[in-house]
Length: 107
Image (cartoon, rainbow, N blue to C red; front, side):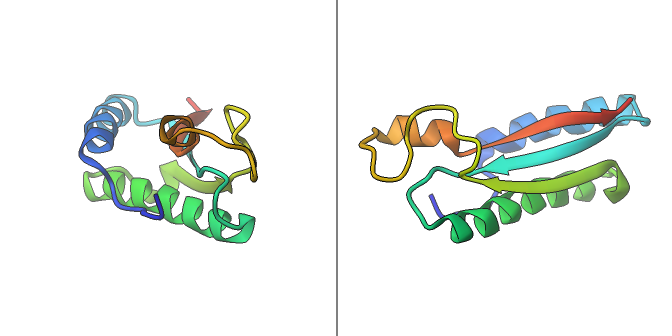
């Protein structure tokens, strides 16, 4: 929580994504990061953008051109469950909302 560093498990996934992007040089991606709903929404938007930027920086450092990656922070606006502000949820339920997704923009 409250972190934008790349975890080891995420690095493994990003490494696989880097390999796919190297094999398919015409693909452009949206890198969309999300947070849980526990912090204020403004803070969550900033944090999610930092997470998206960190994922992009990781891939750029491994040889992917910046113009192929579009980082976007969605904060807590696209929750995958009912863990809205004021709702009791387990840590695992909150973790489900803390994620980074990729969407193909162009092939």
